[in-house]
Image (tube, rainbow, N blue to C red; front, side):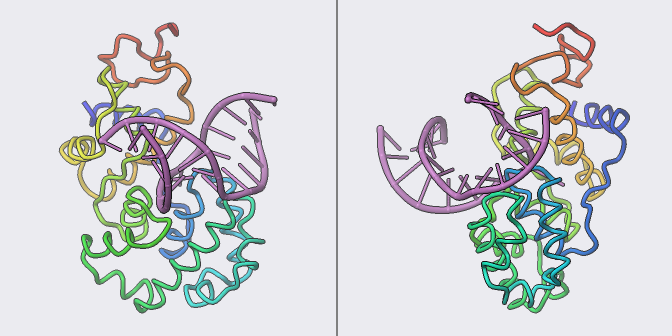
Length: 214
DNA sequence: CACCAGGGTGGTT
DNA sequence: AACCACCATGGT
Protein backbone atom coordinates (compact mmCIF):
# COMPACT_ATOMS: atom_id res chain seq x y z
CA UNK A 1 0.00 0.00 0.00
CA UNK A 2 2.72 2.43 0.96
CA UNK A 3 5.01 1.18 -1.76
CA UNK A 4 2.27 1.49 -4.39
CA UNK A 5 1.63 5.11 -3.41
CA UNK A 6 5.35 5.77 -3.33
CA UNK A 7 5.75 4.44 -6.86
CA UNK A 8 2.90 6.59 -8.02
CA UNK A 9 4.29 9.76 -6.55
CA UNK A 10 7.69 8.95 -8.03
CA UNK A 11 6.15 8.47 -11.46
CA UNK A 12 4.11 11.63 -11.19
CA UNK A 13 6.57 14.06 -9.62
CA UNK A 14 9.89 12.48 -10.54
CA UNK A 15 12.93 12.05 -8.28
CA UNK A 16 13.24 15.01 -5.92
CA UNK A 17 16.98 14.76 -5.43
CA UNK A 18 17.09 15.91 -1.82
CA UNK A 19 19.08 17.35 -0.12
CA UNK A 20 20.17 20.38 -2.15
CA UNK A 21 23.52 21.19 -0.51
CA UNK A 22 27.25 20.94 -1.15
CA UNK A 23 28.26 19.17 2.04
CA UNK A 24 26.83 17.39 5.11
CA UNK A 25 27.30 20.31 7.48
CA UNK A 26 25.31 22.51 5.13
CA UNK A 27 22.51 19.96 5.32
CA UNK A 28 22.55 20.07 9.10
CA UNK A 29 22.35 23.86 9.06
CA UNK A 30 19.61 23.78 6.44
CA UNK A 31 17.60 21.22 8.41
CA UNK A 32 17.48 23.60 11.35
CA UNK A 33 16.72 26.65 9.26
CA UNK A 34 13.91 25.09 7.25
CA UNK A 35 11.85 24.36 10.33
CA UNK A 36 8.37 25.81 9.98
CA UNK A 37 9.27 27.83 6.91
CA UNK A 38 9.64 27.39 3.16
CA UNK A 39 12.74 25.98 1.56
CA UNK A 40 13.06 29.13 -0.53
CA UNK A 41 13.40 31.20 2.65
CA UNK A 42 15.75 28.71 4.30
CA UNK A 43 17.91 28.55 1.18
CA UNK A 44 18.40 32.31 1.26
CA UNK A 45 19.56 32.05 4.84
CA UNK A 46 21.94 29.22 3.99
CA UNK A 47 23.35 31.20 1.07
CA UNK A 48 23.87 34.25 3.27
CA UNK A 49 25.74 32.16 5.81
CA UNK A 50 27.84 30.68 3.05
CA UNK A 51 28.74 34.12 1.74
CA UNK A 52 30.04 35.00 5.18
CA UNK A 53 32.12 31.86 5.37
CA UNK A 54 29.96 30.55 8.20
CA UNK A 55 29.30 27.09 6.84
CA UNK A 56 32.35 25.68 8.60
CA UNK A 57 31.47 24.48 12.06
CA UNK A 58 34.32 26.32 13.82
CA UNK A 59 33.34 29.62 12.21
CA UNK A 60 29.65 29.15 12.87
CA UNK A 61 30.31 28.13 16.46
CA UNK A 62 32.27 31.32 17.09
CA UNK A 63 30.01 33.71 15.20
CA UNK A 64 28.17 36.36 17.26
CA UNK A 65 24.41 35.95 17.42
CA UNK A 66 23.89 39.33 15.85
CA UNK A 67 25.83 38.34 12.76
CA UNK A 68 23.85 35.14 12.44
CA UNK A 69 20.54 36.88 12.94
CA UNK A 70 21.22 39.32 10.15
CA UNK A 71 21.91 36.45 7.76
CA UNK A 72 19.09 34.13 8.63
CA UNK A 73 16.29 36.62 9.17
CA UNK A 74 14.23 35.63 6.10
CA UNK A 75 13.94 32.09 7.47
CA UNK A 76 11.97 33.34 10.48
CA UNK A 77 12.42 32.70 14.23
CA UNK A 78 15.84 34.24 13.78
CA UNK A 79 16.47 34.80 17.47
CA UNK A 80 15.94 31.18 18.50
CA UNK A 81 17.45 29.76 15.34
CA UNK A 82 20.63 31.80 15.66
CA UNK A 83 21.21 30.42 19.14
CA UNK A 84 20.44 26.88 18.03
CA UNK A 85 22.73 27.10 15.01
CA UNK A 86 25.47 28.27 17.27
CA UNK A 87 25.01 25.32 19.59
CA UNK A 88 24.75 22.84 16.76
CA UNK A 89 28.03 24.12 15.36
CA UNK A 90 29.64 23.92 18.78
CA UNK A 91 28.54 20.30 19.05
CA UNK A 92 30.00 19.40 15.66
CA UNK A 93 33.23 21.25 16.33
CA UNK A 94 33.63 19.67 19.77
CA UNK A 95 33.07 16.23 18.26
CA UNK A 96 35.92 16.81 15.83
CA UNK A 97 33.92 17.75 12.78
CA UNK A 98 31.49 15.93 10.51
CA UNK A 99 34.15 13.39 9.62
CA UNK A 100 34.36 12.26 13.23
CA UNK A 101 30.59 12.18 13.58
CA UNK A 102 30.34 9.92 10.58
CA UNK A 103 32.09 7.19 12.55
CA UNK A 104 29.39 7.13 15.22
CA UNK A 105 26.60 4.60 15.28
CA UNK A 106 23.17 5.74 14.17
CA UNK A 107 21.54 5.32 17.62
CA UNK A 108 24.30 7.26 19.32
CA UNK A 109 24.28 10.03 16.75
CA UNK A 110 20.53 10.26 16.97
CA UNK A 111 20.48 10.63 20.74
CA UNK A 112 23.24 13.22 20.58
CA UNK A 113 21.32 15.24 18.03
CA UNK A 114 18.12 14.97 20.07
CA UNK A 115 19.97 16.33 23.09
CA UNK A 116 20.58 19.59 21.24
CA UNK A 117 18.09 22.39 21.73
CA UNK A 118 15.98 22.90 18.66
CA UNK A 119 16.47 19.42 17.25
CA UNK A 120 13.48 17.14 17.70
CA UNK A 121 12.74 13.78 16.16
CA UNK A 122 11.98 14.99 12.68
CA UNK A 123 15.02 17.20 12.33
CA UNK A 124 17.28 14.58 13.89
CA UNK A 125 16.03 11.92 11.50
CA UNK A 126 16.29 14.27 8.52
CA UNK A 127 19.92 14.95 9.42
CA UNK A 128 20.63 11.25 9.84
CA UNK A 129 19.06 10.43 6.48
CA UNK A 130 20.22 13.33 4.32
CA UNK A 131 23.52 14.37 5.90
CA UNK A 132 24.77 11.02 7.16
CA UNK A 133 23.01 8.72 4.71
CA UNK A 134 21.55 6.44 7.32
CA UNK A 135 18.46 4.41 6.39
CA UNK A 136 16.04 6.27 8.66
CA UNK A 137 12.33 6.96 8.17
CA UNK A 138 11.56 10.66 8.50
CA UNK A 139 8.01 11.12 9.76
CA UNK A 140 6.43 14.56 9.69
CA UNK A 141 2.90 15.93 10.01
CA UNK A 142 2.48 15.60 6.24
CA UNK A 143 3.23 11.92 6.14
CA UNK A 144 0.86 11.27 9.03
CA UNK A 145 -1.99 12.98 7.18
CA UNK A 146 -0.91 11.27 3.98
CA UNK A 147 -1.11 7.87 5.62
CA UNK A 148 -4.36 8.60 7.41
CA UNK A 149 -6.06 9.78 4.23
CA UNK A 150 -4.73 6.89 2.27
CA UNK A 151 -6.30 4.45 4.70
CA UNK A 152 -9.33 6.59 5.44
CA UNK A 153 -8.70 6.38 9.17
CA UNK A 154 -7.65 8.64 12.00
CA UNK A 155 -4.03 9.74 12.19
CA UNK A 156 -1.52 7.00 12.90
CA UNK A 157 1.16 7.36 15.53
CA UNK A 158 4.70 8.21 14.54
CA UNK A 159 5.91 4.80 15.62
CA UNK A 160 3.30 2.90 13.65
CA UNK A 161 3.91 4.87 10.48
CA UNK A 162 7.66 4.48 10.85
CA UNK A 163 7.26 0.72 11.18
CA UNK A 164 4.92 0.53 8.21
CA UNK A 165 7.20 2.50 5.94
CA UNK A 166 10.25 0.54 7.02
CA UNK A 167 8.35 -2.62 6.15
CA UNK A 168 7.66 -1.59 2.57
CA UNK A 169 10.54 0.67 1.63
CA UNK A 170 14.20 0.00 2.17
CA UNK A 171 17.54 1.68 1.81
CA UNK A 172 18.73 5.25 1.92
CA UNK A 173 17.70 5.93 -1.66
CA UNK A 174 14.03 5.03 -1.25
CA UNK A 175 13.65 6.58 2.18
CA UNK A 176 15.25 9.74 0.85
CA UNK A 177 12.75 9.97 -2.00
CA UNK A 178 9.80 8.92 0.10
CA UNK A 179 10.02 11.82 2.51
CA UNK A 180 10.76 14.29 -0.26
CA UNK A 181 7.88 13.02 -2.38
CA UNK A 182 5.39 13.24 0.47
CA UNK A 183 6.41 16.85 1.05
CA UNK A 184 6.12 17.59 -2.65
CA UNK A 185 2.75 15.88 -2.82
CA UNK A 186 1.50 17.80 0.18
CA UNK A 187 2.37 21.07 -1.51
CA UNK A 188 0.03 20.20 -4.33
CA UNK A 189 -2.70 18.59 -2.25
CA UNK A 190 -5.43 20.56 -0.59
CA UNK A 191 -4.90 20.82 3.15
CA UNK A 192 -8.25 22.29 4.07
CA UNK A 193 -10.52 19.44 3.15
CA UNK A 194 -9.66 16.10 4.72
CA UNK A 195 -10.25 14.25 1.47
CA UNK A 196 -10.31 16.39 -1.60
CA UNK A 197 -9.73 15.22 -5.15
CA UNK A 198 -5.97 15.50 -4.90
CA UNK A 199 -5.19 14.37 -1.39
CA UNK A 200 -4.96 10.67 -2.02
CA UNK A 201 -2.79 8.84 -4.50
CA UNK A 202 -3.97 5.40 -3.53
CA UNK A 203 -5.94 3.75 -6.33
CA UNK A 204 -8.18 2.07 -3.78
CA UNK A 205 -9.29 5.39 -2.41
CA UNK A 206 -12.88 6.12 -3.36
CA UNK A 207 -12.05 9.72 -3.87
CA UNK A 208 -9.16 9.28 -6.21
CA UNK A 209 -7.35 11.96 -8.07
CA UNK A 210 -10.00 12.34 -10.73
CA UNK A 211 -12.98 12.24 -8.43
CA UNK A 212 -14.86 15.49 -7.75
CA UNK A 213 -14.14 17.23 -4.47
CA UNK A 214 -16.77 16.60 -1.76
C1' DC B 1 -7.32 40.50 6.12
C1' DA B 2 -6.35 35.42 7.51
C1' DC B 3 -3.61 31.56 6.94
C1' DC B 4 0.54 28.89 6.77
C1' DA B 5 5.44 27.04 5.66
C1' DG B 6 10.27 20.62 4.83
C1' DG B 7 9.27 22.10 13.94
C1' DG B 8 10.59 22.58 18.68
C1' DT B 9 9.92 23.97 23.42
C1' DG B 10 7.68 24.89 27.64
C1' DG B 11 3.52 25.15 30.17
C1' DT B 12 -1.29 23.67 31.28
C1' DT B 13 -5.24 20.30 31.54
C1' DA C 1 -1.06 11.95 26.40
C1' DA C 2 -3.38 15.88 24.21
C1' DC C 3 -3.65 20.50 23.82
C1' DC C 4 -1.85 25.41 23.83
C1' DA C 5 1.04 29.86 23.03
C1' DC C 6 5.05 31.14 21.40
C1' DC C 7 8.86 31.82 18.29
C1' DA C 8 8.96 35.64 13.24
C1' DT C 9 9.40 36.36 8.31
C1' DG C 10 7.42 36.21 3.74
C1' DG C 11 4.14 34.58 0.39
C1' DT C 12 -0.76 33.85 -1.20
